[in-house]
View 1 (cartoon, rainbow over the protein chains, first blue to last red):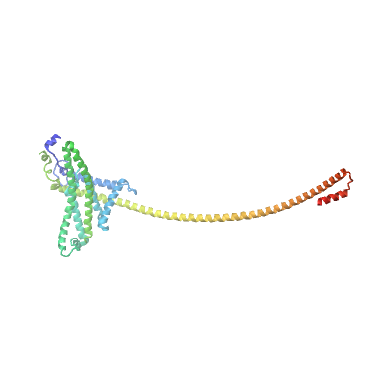
View 2 (cartoon, chains in turn purple, blue):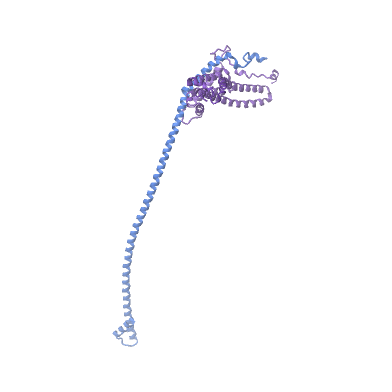
Length: 249
Length: 173
């Protein structure tokens, strides 16, 4: 304890997010297997365990694991149906893929010592960017130029409409930014705070129980945030999809 | 500080903004998402959809079967009620018939018994009359004999005809 006190509090809350090669110390090329690869692989395994291994009984009266898989399926299915309507159900597999990946990657990231793939802006930007591009292309394919009526608020007074159109346009292009940063920011902040508290616990000696209580409380909050952010990302995707399918306000 | 030497350049800022790692992350993320998508769309989702549909079908069938059974139960109850009413009516009829039969038999028996009783009564009356007559005869005989004896004892000569006449007169009186 005395050594650490002398050296000052050493906390590296961001070290957990460093991307490093799994084997050796070389440069990171696009194909290098890294800790990102490993934890993405674990996410795929978790999805397989939940949705394939868990449901292998195909029972009319489900087992516990099958029940959880069916609940996830039913939850997202209902969300897509409620928000986008019947015609949105065609895109349910894609949305379900997003939801399960984010949910399970968030939960895997809560394992101490793990690497959280969803804390990286590169990952969430790809997810949000894919949603943005898909939804925009889909909007023009389904509605043609009529998709632009999304920006033309016909219920507003005529003089206000051009101004509103500019605001709508800006907000439309801000969507992928907020969509991706919301997820990465929430996950990163929670994990960083946990590390900071852990650093306090290591340096406070006898009083370390105080930050440890803090860690327990924040960890519980992070469990909640993991599920909520997966839900928020998914429902926003549904809302954007609804805009593409029915652009008229 | 020791931290900077161990952490290197990456620890200085946010690892999230280390753009050199972006191609790597994006490449592996796309692979992982494709893997998840194919696992879900090829295996998991058809399976769960089938199970859910099967469950829905089973529930619907069971409900229909339950409805049918309920109708059958109502029918059975009606049939039972009908059978009960029939049986009750039949029982009433049987009871009435039996009662009438018994009554008829009883009437016949009573008549027979009445006739028998009447016959017996007549017979008995006859017997009583005979007994009474013979008793009267005996009394006459005894009275005659006694009267003769009395007359003889008293020293008279008993005239049989007179005595008999006297006794007869007394007996009548």
